[in-house]
Image: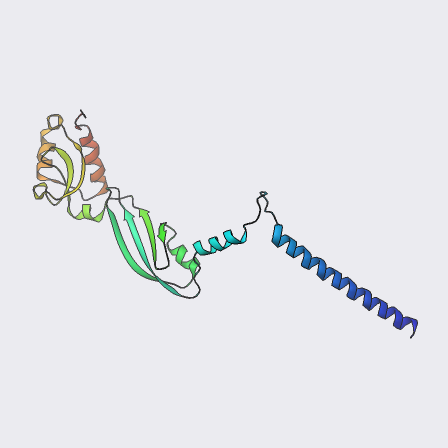
Length: 198
């Protein structure tokens, strides 16, 4: 065997030994990192049990999935409307982006409930709400005129002696709510005639 062939053989053996050593070091280092790595805040990594719990609590959709979506809208007057729709989730990112203006209230495999605060009065008040006084002199919003006695919302006792006569007359007939502005202004004006609590 020539000197050149011996030299090539030694180089090949050296190179293979170096590669095997490098592979061993990489394998060892990655195992060590996975087993005991600490994050930047000094806390140890999530253990396997916690990781499984996390996976259970965060639903992952593989392929299209149909769920019921419940949309709860809470209005200034305390009314809550509820709408239920069926949604097919094709991509989670798109689904969550679509409901980005909503707050997640509840979620399971078949049903997701979102809520949203609406800075307006409810459609019920706009269509059929009337301010009036009940038989005890409590400021109330009725469904329809006050004589119908269908209460939607009650507020506080009014001292009718402190109330100007035209307001008393209007409340007797019923003041249509119609808008958020009317709702807020009537409450503001009549708060001055609020009866003192005993």
